[in-house]
Image (cartoon, rainbow, N blue to C red; front, side):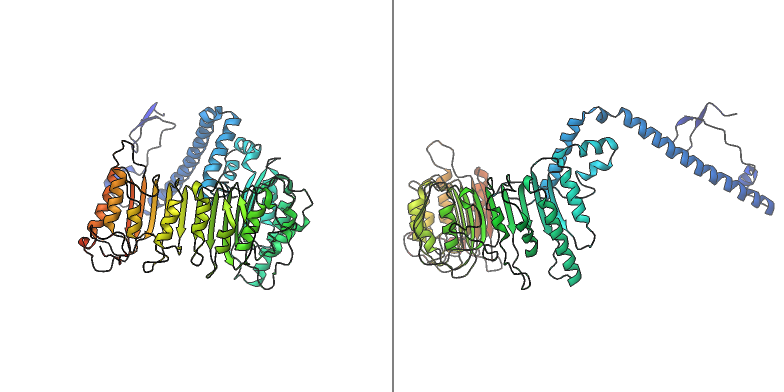
Length: 550
């Protein structure tokens, strides 16, 4: 007869016994360690089979009990009391967090996270937890109005069916869509054809939802995929706000003869445009036949353009507040003057050796420009005259590989009284064009009557001709001002493109203890250690100084 309680030899706890175990008939043999006879061995084998069968049965019973326990725990779980609308909001927040972790920053055109359709990631993972969660997910259109989809090289329409199902779940909400490929340039011909076909099918699929496009990102698609846009009817993109096209250079067998982008000319709400290669896509920037509605755009980011393209775009884009141009082609020699009254942010990057920005600087004037970034302007000398006309409102300046010398640079600083953030990367050369931060410039930044009195952030790379002692003197003066006000300088980043002694680095790093976010780096550390004493405090700061070794 089973006892009411049983003591478990495994866990040490006392449990209610379900059934008494039948004592082994072979206990005397086990206790005395005797050798069983042949008949006893056969009986022992039968007992083992019965015992193993009991173990299997008990394991199944344990599994069943665990399932029963889990089901009953789920019934009383607190999460079951959460209203569906709250669960939907939780799903949305988790999906956004996961998508933002994998999204590329689009600070210039605005941030927009895009959801990737991965089975074990949000929102698809919510559909596999329970019928209740699946119902909540499928009834929440905001989970499905964002999609970042990579087309495959498979002949089956997996991506197409997934794309259509996903967008249908979004109800009537505005859509954010990104299409991008696997790298297929070096695929075998058959796989490459499959990928291109899949991409065209995807474009045709999203075309049916064109009336709900708000954000469209076409990332390195084959040229023939863009031709699908020729099927757009006039007025079929009424709410499109942002268009991003990372255009590939078409192979010989994929020449960009058509201009499908003209179909987007009538996009009444288009405000943000990124187009990576104007010159490779037959884009027209001027005249009545302009490809895009430049006059209504507020943020423009284009590449593979000329200075003439920049001026034509700026001439038409009267409402633009931010523009970024990557210049790769030469330009005409003449253009009429342009006065822009809305432009606040201007980024210019020269990617073609020998290109001059002189035409741009001589023709353009901006009345409210606050941020200016110029990279690779190694030829023209017109930037100081542009800043003379425009610099009164500039608060942030970035110069990279500029051909300005220190006198021209100081002239620019004088014309920017509101400048607060300054970042300069010099050209490695002797004193002259390409070197901005000489000892004379550091002296001009030193109180009591410094240039750029409102400077808050300074980032300089190069300084092959700068004495660290003059830098220390400038920092001491700005941080120790006796006017009773807190120092305006908050962050300093210095990258020396020469050897600097350890003691000099320590002196500069020490300003980090005075409330400044300080970062000091040095390059060419394999050279012989310099001498701190070689930076003389009594040097004629207005003379043409030779390179100094710390």
